[in-house]
Image (cartoon, rainbow, N blue to C red; front, side, top):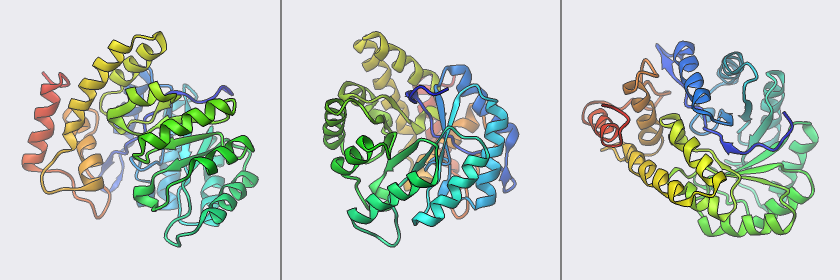
Length: 304
């Protein structure tokens, strides 16, 4: 499968039970999304708890995912870490599990300038034959990847694509315009669940929606409508998904605990996950927050 990766590529949420990877729930989860028609999986991204996972746990997740997928769709793997040599170690691990591409952020913790970021991605390119994607997520790594950097690395063959979670829709549209003018060297996927329709209109090649763990069918329907040029259907699907995304508006919980916590709670309520357990030190949603997630699922037709 050498065609460019495009379409609906959910960032795989990871089920836990008793502190261990819940492979039974994982199989149910992956098969549900494949049955919905997703086009690929992004494993070990932010939703996939990459920064919470030891190298051993990353390996367990990759091994379990590949054994469940069995080549039915492509798998791209996050190799996210603080600095270049550590990322290369993760690339070697991902290669050993036969993934189809790897995804890396800019270096972080020891914050660096654009010259070092260029060198980082070029060094990663030299270290692997796999397609290399850039993950633009400044809220976590505190560096916004500039359009000039991304286009330079794309036209030079260093990068194959960009997973954009920058929150900067203006920059994304300019990036899509520059990408088209350069002959489309980069595959551009948006990571913003509630503005996928706008990203498609801007020129995105697909989406990496965390909410796609909860309702993959709707994101596939929206993609199919986009491919058919049915923009009214695209809007209708996105409006409903925007309503569904309100599951993250929980009380007294922020960030990862609210977002991924709500996705896992929804998956438990839907009977996909056995638990809504979270990685240490994040606590699972409880009480009124579980009730809130359930109410949104009912309002959007996910539960009877």
